[in-house]
Image 1 (cartoon, one colour):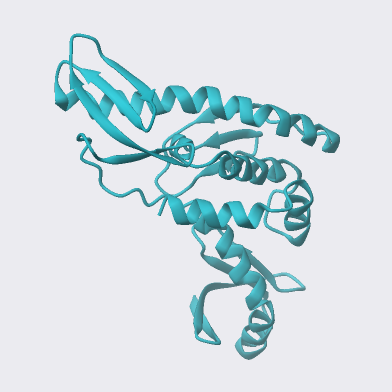
Image 2 (cartoon, one colour):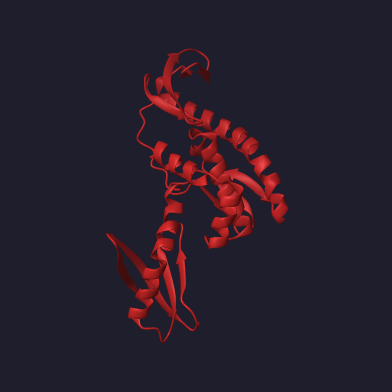
Length: 231
């Protein structure tokens, strides 16, 4: 059943399920949905009281997932339009020519193509190629650090995701959104560290937060930067 509490000016909606358990359990999903499992004999007033006490924690967990919700504005892929690469802004320069290429030249991303309509696909492919090489080079020293916890990802793959910057499968595969290549290196490191922490702790418990803070003390700065520049 759907319920809600008021916490200050904020409404926290939650889905309540009763089960044969002894204590209240609260889970925040990647979609920022709050799931509450309560003992069968619990009163709704006591459940809501406990959720109010946990409200700061719930809000904090929901904020983790904000950075995994890309909101890329519509692009037209025309000369003069600005595009990001590793946190820096570049202007597109589209040239008509026989070759099909994309190159960084000073403050420009220069696309040479026989037809302007191909510019979008050429740029997307260029981003993907750079994401493959950059993400792996950024990830390697971080993976090495996490070996102290006896964990290592089975693989790192790229996949377009409409609502996430990264994810980690139960079998240890880390999936990264290629759109991250537009963000600064620190933002990419933050997402990779976040997913590596999931190899140790599979949910967003306090132990997970403590580990993330230990391995990347300034993660909140990079999370906020990611939310801001790719909003």
